[in-house]
Amino acid sequence: MSALKIVLISPRNPLNIGAAARAMSNFGFSELRLVNPYAVAFREARSAVKAHAVLEHAREYPTVAEAVADCTLVVGTTAIGPRVLEHPLRRLEFGGKLIARKIATSPVALLFGSEKFGLSNEDMSYCHWLMRIPAREEHGSMNLGQAVAVCLYEIIRNPAAAKIAPEAKRPADAAHLEHVTEFLETILDRSGYVHARVEGSTRMKIRRLVRRLQLNAHDAEVWLGMLRQILWKLEHTSDSGSRGE
Image (tube, rainbow, N blue to C red):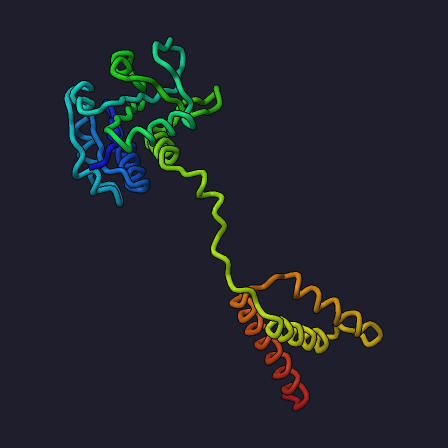
């Protein structure tokens, strides 16, 4: 059972419920709780693409108190707006780290309010602190499904993973690079690109250019295949023309 409980309070749009469930599935969270959902919306949301497993096991609660009863940390999300907050407010970047650490040892509830009004003061009274997604002041609120996705990504995000270099591919050896160079030289010569008076310097430029491409072994083979085909086509067209076909 997931230590993070996503709690949607009075959701009314089945698309938003489905999007929230899909975001949970995307990021590896499975426990969805709904407080007083609009019945029609919840029934329709159960058909959400690729989120059926989360929705099938979603649980309904009549009150916020019951939905968060087993959690040792309750965090509410808010766009702030005109209301006066009585709770500590943390930006998502910092709050996400705190939640990530907490769910390693105990259950945490993350609350999202209704699409129209967000969390009420009553809802917030159950929270230990609040968290906001940094957005521009002119359009501070987000779609419910999007907000769930952004929060969950921040909770699972591992900054160290971004520094891991992609798996290195075996570089092409000198022989393969020379084959690419030779085919390219031949094609350019056949096409009239290389002029006799600068032939030597052009060939050196081509050789340096091929090396600067830093081709890996696989890409070198692909280039060789393309160049062979181009050269075959040039030779075939030339032969056909000489026979008057």
